[in-house]
Length: 315
Figure 1 (cartoon, rainbow, N blue to C red):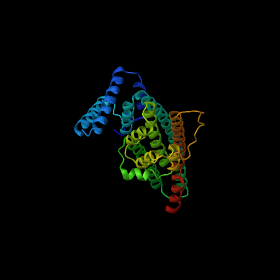
Figure 2: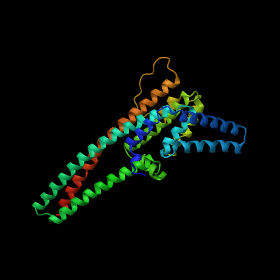
Figure 3: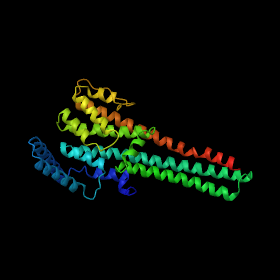
């Protein structure tokens, strides 16, 4: 599935755009999901565990019906659950469509940059090999084999990076690998910003539906998938419940690091302020992806001095 076209950003943008049709069946499904969610909470408060589990199973069955052959990714499904529970499912589809449209543009940019970088690296490798053969430092056979090996290594690393991205996207990476990835420069910041955007989006959907801030916080944190950041958001929710300002808690825990926030209109309510926060995080998330994309050709070019040294010492 990791290499399926259904995992591509273009396909997923079209998928969620097509779901914004205001389908009456989908709206009815959302209302039924909300009723079951209310029933589950009432049963839990009454300590009727069996009935609460039946309501939870019913919600799961509804999600399976909605998913069908669409193959929603785990994090998408959690966001859809928030949308169904809060009656904001169309807002979820809009957010996901915009998200994947931007990722698709980034992917097109990556392809252009990598193709041009690969062409430059290939030409430079060939010229270095020809020069080494001309200076009689290596034979033509060794030059050919060395160029092929270097190109294969580049292709393998590129494929590994692609599969790693798809694995993270599909929620199939191991917890140990996740902890390693978050410490890689730029990549770790992208993953942190992505989780922060998801958390704020969940909370924004909850508040837009009329839920109170404490309830919205619990819902937003609960619907995040397991990741190295999930425990931090749980701590943030507890800190806010204990009386700390939400924005102050976000700043102190580093979730708004390098995020430029707009000016809050006078008299704005909490939902407007939250939308401003989420928008600022989304902009920083996209900008960081662009910086990461711009660094990829430079990283590929690092193979040239290494190959030059190889030719120097092998001769």
